[in-house]
Length: 225
Image (cartoon, rainbow, N blue to C red):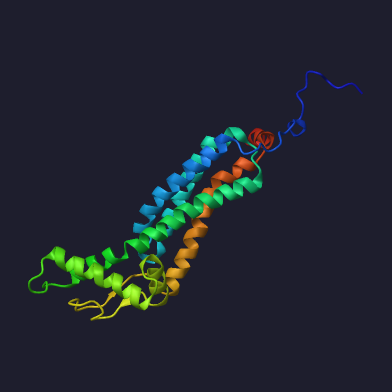
């Protein structure tokens, strides 16, 4: 039987290129995604404590944006090896997640100072507002070093996962307890879900990079309209 030469070959018979080696464009896409993820991580540290875990929505949203940027830069390289796409997705998600957690921990003394000043109607005699704030910052850092070594950001993680509350009198001249809206197991759950949601947002865009171009063309041809 003779084949009609005028008939185009079926899409599934088109040759599919093998996954390319590590090209500069792919590394550039990853670098752009990680830098953008880190910037978003700072913003996420401020929305993470929204009531009812509503801040998790922004982890998905920012993940979608990061994934779209990576896809836009690297889409001409398709198909990229699935393992490389998984690794790139993980690196972008971890960049955003890690920066958000670090910034959250680094900002903790400032959060305590802000709450304490709001809840202390009368400043200690002889202290200005700036001096009172500096004292609270020093006291908070000292509490983390003493009770949750080594202090700093790791100490904050230990504190919020186990207690998340500074009792009345823990900080000199602060007449009320200080606590965060998420603490203990609620905070742990939020931290885990934030990584999952970020990875989902990024991956929903980047995983298409592992799909052969011929497969995408076939899907578009089969789409209605």
